[in-house]
Image (tube, rainbow, N blue to C red; front, top):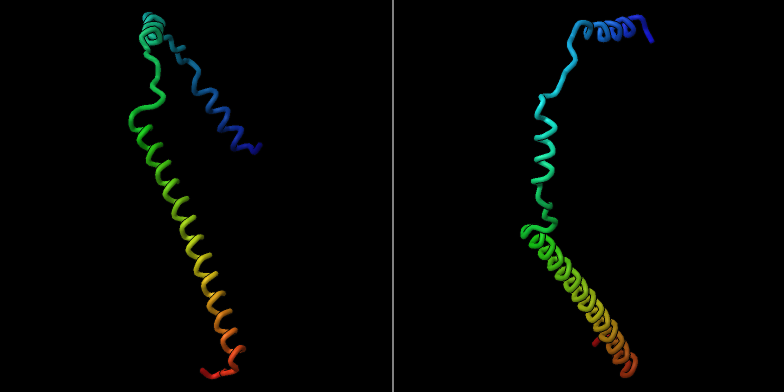
Length: 100
């Protein structure tokens, strides 16, 4: 350590010389015991927590349903476009009228 930091530490340690030791009040232990005995059990699930959990579950459910419907819609439109192109190509090949 540098000389300045050693001097600072020494000043801190010597600043407490002559001070009195702190003692708690005589009835502090009794007050603490009384608080422990009177303490009720902590409520784990309040009505707000239950409501928040239910709302989150509903939002997740709606998101899952929306994603599934989006996928089904895209698959069906992709299938339709493939079928439409297939039918169009067949009509061109079958009657040889390319520019219709």
